[in-house]
Amino acid sequence: MDEVDRIVSAWRHERPDLDVSPMEILSRVSRLAKQLDKARKATFHNHGLEVWAFDVLSALRRSGEPYQLSPTRLIGEMMVTSGTMTNRIDRLVSAGWVSRHPDPADRRGVLVRLTEAGKQKVDDALAELLVLERELLADLTAPQKRRLTELLRVLSTGFEHDDEA
Amino acid sequence: MDEVDRIVSAWRHERPDLDVSPMEILSRVSRLAKQLDKARKATFHNHGLEVWAFDVLSALRRSGEPYQLSPTRLIGEMMVTSGTMTNRIDRLVSAGWVSRHPDPADRRGVLVRLTEAGKQKVDDALAELLVLERELLADLTAPQKRRLTELLRVLSTGFEHDDEA
DNA sequence: CCATGGTACTTCGGTATCGAGATTCTTGGG
DNA sequence: CCCAAGAATCTCGATACCGAAGTACCATGG
Image (cartoon, rainbow over all chains, first blue to last red; front, side, top):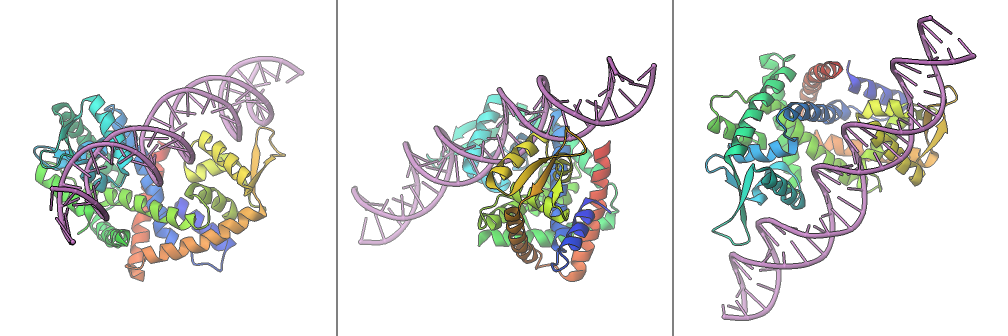
């Protein structure tokens, strides 16, 4: 019995005419994401890092050498607007964690590159993030985690498909 | 193969020393929530409603007659700060969807009550929200939905338990 | 080789949030 | 009854985001 069970049962009492079962899944997804964000924020705070900053730095880190991507690419990966991304990059440059370089192949373009300091920061933070995430998943058995992953992937591909429309 | 599969496989290539499998679940939860928010925003926009407004109105609606709750109670249900809630209530009062009343049992307290206009608004929006949510879940079979619900509930109770610490 | 439509990024104004502190009132012990 | 501790709400400054408009550049058809 969690908070969503209470919410759903309240709806069933007030609106017995409606089928509110979709909330059993989707309200849980929303609430879990919100709590996850808070946990992440607390973890990164120990590293003087914000969640949004980690998101950008980690996208660059996992892209591999030379750890650089265009703003457009970053926008796509983290689902924010272009204005937001410009602003994030500005602040990361000020912090010394990334640098901007003109794209030699396209003079409109920019390449955002991880600095050595940025790489260290994100590698440290990633290790701690994974510690946190493992804790949060501790109540699930290995087969449960596999099943959950697969079900979420089905949902995810449905969502991504809808986005294009 | 969804975006999280690509992210995870990039990490495995760059950091084969780390076990990034927790992301298979938790990154999907985050991304799904973000996409869900966008879909909700689009749906509510047809009703001239914001997501935050629906959250408050729906909490009042499902609480049943006389459709009133204290700000403290609302804060608990939607995991926002007290400052945020004061601000939300102010705007809902301006819109004519809720009204503030002194709590007769505690002079520090306030009761936020749904107006008739607010009740109509939220009932209309709820119906459309459920249409959207059913569409988003259309790729899942009934047994898959049941399994997913149960697995998310396990995760959820773990998270809620951690919060208290 | 120019015009046109499209892409990449930035700028800027508006908005919603958090977090910390202030205010008002309640509660329990002495 | 009084006081201290705590609770409920509000205030306010700082932050990050979105969305729309602006600038610079690319690419294609004629």
